[in-house]
Length: 211
Ligand SMILES: N[C@@H](CCC(=O)N[C@@H](CS)C(=O)NCC(=O)O)C(=O)O
Image (cartoon, rainbow, N blue to C red):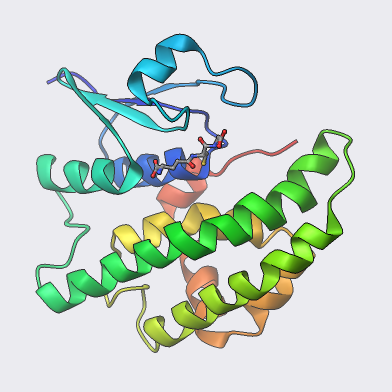
């Protein structure tokens, strides 16, 4: 069986979630560093018609959308299960992934991290109004996670799951902003989860180097 291929840059949060799913199971893979910051390469649009990363390939099977890719990885490769067998726990994991996709990523990454971290790296001024406008949604997302994690070790229970792997790349960048540092520190369950998970071997191995 050939190694799976992830098409996407190492800096991408969503590509990192897929890499984390493979790393957690010790599965080797090839990373094809597609650059999506400028014009999207036409061959990438054939893999991902929305011009996003990642796209994934395994044994001639092509797939995009991180949720679908990570469930495929979990259901195809042997090893540690990253989705709870219990239906209620699995629903909780999927709820958290939905929160991250719909509210967490758009506020914490698309607004706060892009303005506070990425734009200054490109010598551009951050849009303070955009950051301020996004924080209420980021805070609500963190409140939801704070309640759901409760006293669990991981976001969706006592075992690591795809919910954690969806969240780690978002927290990695958000925690580097002053707004993110403060917002995480205000929520003890989320703060404890982040400090427990951030230096896990799969996280260290895939940690992006900014700047
Ligand atoms: N629904 C997609 C979203 C992927 C996504 O938004 N990826 C970001 C990078 S982390 C991207 O491609 N951004 C480039 C852009 O929006 O132009 C998925 O789940 O894979």
